[in-house]
Amino acid sequence: MPETSRSITTYISIMLLLTVATQIFYIATLGGVGIVEGWPLRSTLWTAEILLFTGITIAALVALVRSPAVPWGWAALVVAGAINIVQSGIGLSMFLPAAKAGPEFAPLMGTLLAGSFLFYNLAKAIIGLAALLFGLSLFRSDKTKVRAIGLISMVAGAIAMILNIAAVYLGLGAVPFSGASGAVATFLQAAQSGFPLLAQAETASLLRRDETLGDQTSWQRENLPLNLGAGYRLDIATLIAQEPR
Image (cartoon, rainbow, N blue to C red; front, side, top):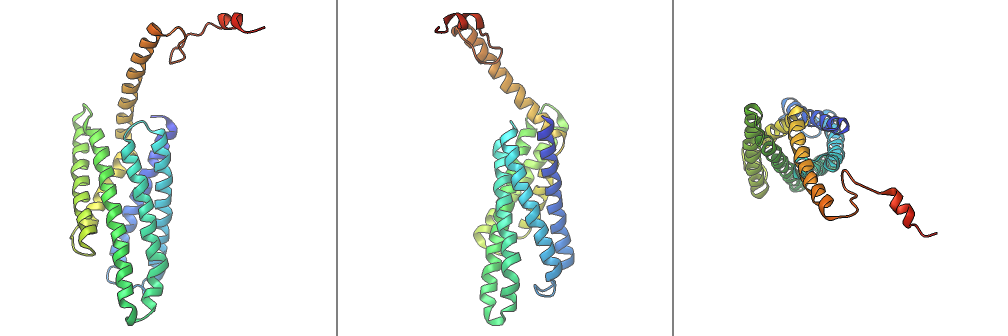
């Protein structure tokens, strides 16, 4: 893997791990605390998550362009990051005014909460898809340990997809462990995207691409008088001689 691409995937891995850490910290410190009472810490965490998911979206988009392996996986991370920005933005911009509006606006608060969690579960389902796709790439390795990690990621990603899609369909609080399964998938995705396992998968992808290009170049040498592909042959003297005077 090129050094620039490896740096990008490392950044993505770190940011994904930080989002898992913020979610765990949020549950541990703000579980059962009201919106208004816990707003200083809650708003700080949501602001941090918006920044992290913005970074993930941008970096995953760059990785999608530069990385030869798992393009659908990187695309899934781009979409999941963008959806998480929306989800955190709803909470950061709308929850406090709705909570301060009073009991008569409780249905509005319930609607905002349900909408926010719809985006939350949708993003977790898409991260599950990314974990599944990256796991599938690792599962194709010829190394047993890499295949085992790929298999675990595929299973965790599939479970996260199923539970969170069900949560999107059934609504807030209807599917237990949907968020937790998404957090597990996020952790495994971070482990896959930022370390040498993905580099091995990308190296294999590059080798397959080079073999394909080699076959094409061989065909071009046999069939084309002027070959501008890899390993091109170009008779400069002939071109100069044929140039109009």
